[in-house]
Length: 104
Image 1 (tube, helix red, strand yellow):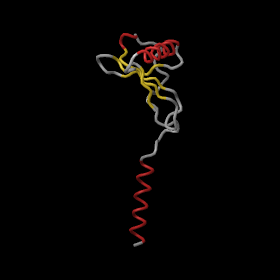
Image 2: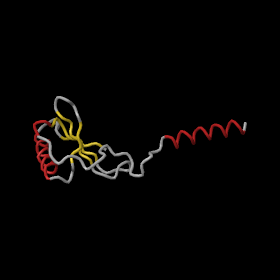
Image 3: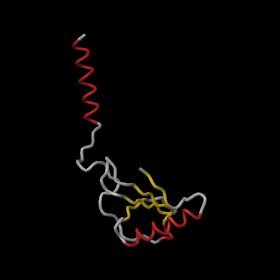
Image 4: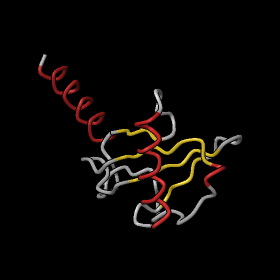
């Protein structure tokens, strides 16, 4: 009975350790600072990921029209700050708010 309990405990410990993040920073979507500019007409939506326990950075992920490709925007760039400000204005004036989405 003790050996079965030990094996179960060892398996649970292995699964728990195996699922832990390898990076001390956590899991961030963006690997670098991101691009400073994307043509607004190419952007379908922007998702905002606020700092959390899994990633200490604020991340802006732009999905491009047509291709669906995702690019990281540098949240400190003037373009990103202006685009978010304008998108928030549009979001408050439209019913669906599909341009800017906030994710946690």
